Length: 323
Image 1 (cartoon, rainbow, N blue to C red):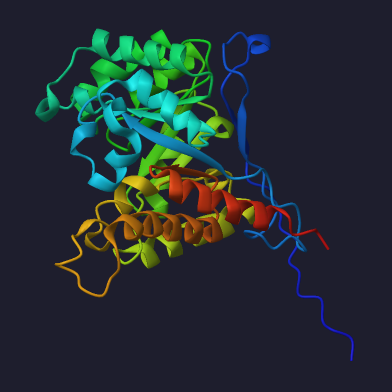
Image 2 (cartoon, one colour):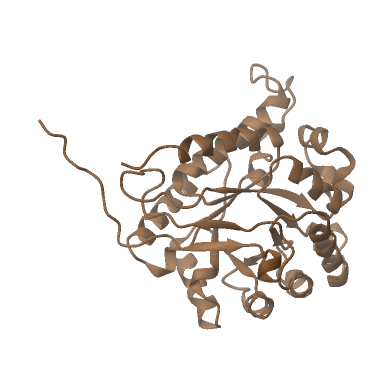
């Protein structure tokens, strides 16, 4: 009996978003990174093109890196005291992009000035030639002061700036429109809020085709299943033709995975769980590879061992031939 063809032909494709600008584009990056473009459910190549290869951004902080778990500090050493040196080390670990989080702008971390933050962005851009993600400190008032200056400092480099939120989007949208950057839109695991935020950004002039969406990420064992289901529903709606959900998706894996007690608790407190030096990287890698199955296009990660494992997984997934 002939097998039934179960392939679904989808109405639309996920938007492609290019991050970074080479000298030919007016920037200084060695290359650009393009994410998105899938025309099928993740990795079902018999239904259509699987899109661009998922990219990995390595996370660095401008301040506070010394608070990271020991397994990470063993990999980065004193680099965590200098964002430019940290970015160089991240590039050695196989980063496709650098994700600079401006934690120093947070009032609890010193509340650095907008000028100091902008100088940090310039130093990281000078240190490495990879595309850059610039991420605020998650305090709206401070981000509205700091991120516009950083956007201006990186003008022409086509960075990904974030995040905009339903209650705080106008300032950063205006800056990124003026300086030619892409935008990261954050929503709290609510498809309707995600769509509404995209509408708000579009209403003040930002193209839907240049947005990347960020549904709040969770780690394995800490709400992962719920996030996965939201991402899956969003991807199906986007492939079905909803223009407000056709954006590529970013998952902030490292931050959440390295908060899990299983990743960082000492061996004597978790007998039978194995060495803590192995648990953290595995927790991050498993979380990341699972998100690839939900349709993640861009992963923000920390540990070089995790990055290596996830890149190997991506290689295998991308090697599956289309039917």
